[in-house]
Amino acid sequence: MTERETDHRYREIDPTKLIHTVSKMADRVEEQFPASGLAAVANEVAAVAEGTVARVAEIKRPRIGLRITVGIMVLLVVSGPFLFSFLLSFSEEVTNLGDFLEATDAGLHMLLVLGGGIFFLVGMENRIHRNQALEALAEFRSLAHLVDLHQINKDPGLDSVLAPHHDTRTVRSDEALASYLDFSGDLLSIVGKLAAYYAQNLSDRVVLDAVNEIETLTSSLSNKLWLKILVLREMMRSAED
Image 1 (cartoon, rainbow, N blue to C red):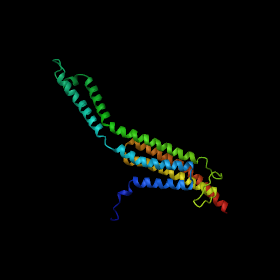
Image 2: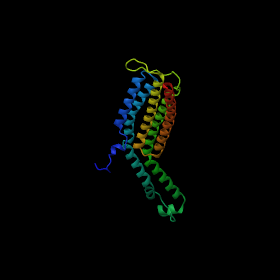
Image 3: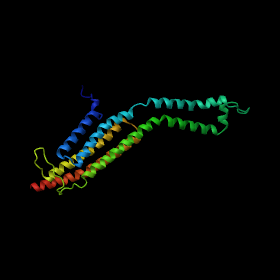
């Protein structure tokens, strides 16, 4: 590989590595905070990550039956006026379909309706993909708020978190709290990456806007967490002095 050559594997989110990363994160949270609400949320995020890969693959799957049906309907819509031109009896002044369309405003309206119908039919599969993706992205939004809900009352200075190590020792509450908030921020980041996986595989503008909203939400919630962590770290340094 030359200096200018790049590996396309590093331009896209690898679903296998994404699932592995989320699974390891859930195990770490469970190990440090067993039977906690955050551990339950982390396990749910891991389950959603596995389902996301399968769900995106299902959404991208071509719907052959639908495409055949739409193709037949489009063919009927396009050929309909020509069929009517052979079946209708025209007066002496209007002897063919072309003269009829030029003589009346109904011809223009007919073309508009036919064009709208064709546009609707052709975009049907894309709308199905969009609706399925938006339904899944709504779950990510709920997950982000759920993660935030579990840390919202975890403030520096409160002895609200105690986490046992594997050697049965208990860490100081401020250290446990810092770890708890750090895990919460990581979970929010993962939720954003799961949403980005939809953007990577679906180019629909509405879906991309929804993904951007979720990434903005997770970033905003993460910023609040980092403010808490910075305050907590400063308190820990002051206590050591």
